[in-house]
Length: 208
Length: 208
Image (cartoon, rainbow over all chains, first blue to last red; front, top):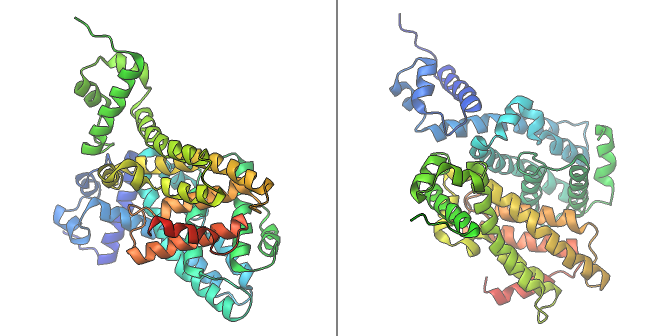
């Protein structure tokens, strides 16, 4: 008997299977034929959902970024948090380490998966910056922030955070990493026009 | 008659041949055996110079970065330039576009070469920041700059520049790119503690 699976279920099955294969064999070494074989579907079924192997990779990265975006979305709509707490929480939510789990992260750092890595940087910056931009514009209106170019400054801060704080791209000692992190926070305070230490003092709650 | 080539000459031959092959076929698809065949050397000769294919890739990226570093080194030792002109010149020298030529750049942007791309970001940031750090520390001493954390701030600015301004990672319209670029300059002015527009006004000489 032929089992016809619901659209989303089948699509997720392709994404999950491909992710496992990419993690085990590396993206470059894995072919569409192998993904198809592993699930036991027809070639046409694969191409009904995805145009290419790279499109599956985009879907995997998008799914990983969804977790980060959802977490930030919740923080931004939490009435118990003030502006600074929302910013601080988002900085932490953005760390891929937290959202994807160590195993996937180790794989991301393998040479063969540098494309997935590069796509993650792009997607995190491009999906997170509009969310925080809205928060900063609101903060400017409320007189909490004095930030000149919210969109551009966010892209600068976010791109350097996800690149520099990533062990796979910039191997650093724990001390160097902490120095970079506190300089990013320091710069963020200047960019937002809040007083020195305003963000750093909140960070202590996170037991850095 | 067996031709014994000088050490550096042979090493460069391996680097250049590998670079051509990686550009044509993509890094992942190209094996050490193919590099060896293309030059017509023994396997042992290859492994005398390099431990692995990835070590050749590192050498290629290092060579590309040498051009940027040499150019910045010259700028920093040009007595006709003031502090700001040296900073501005270095920002331009750092653009991979300038130093590697369009053809190589197009290849860098291809999916298969994302590892080369990622390594370039790391090497440019790590080799350029100590050079500019020295300039900024000197500028602090001379009272031209008031920069709190030269090393860390440079890493933040350089990593976001090479990532965000790279069409291969962040496809943008020309207008978006100009907005990001002028915000980076704006932020750099704040970081260095120079007056607003001090760097931007010098940039006009570059016909942006």
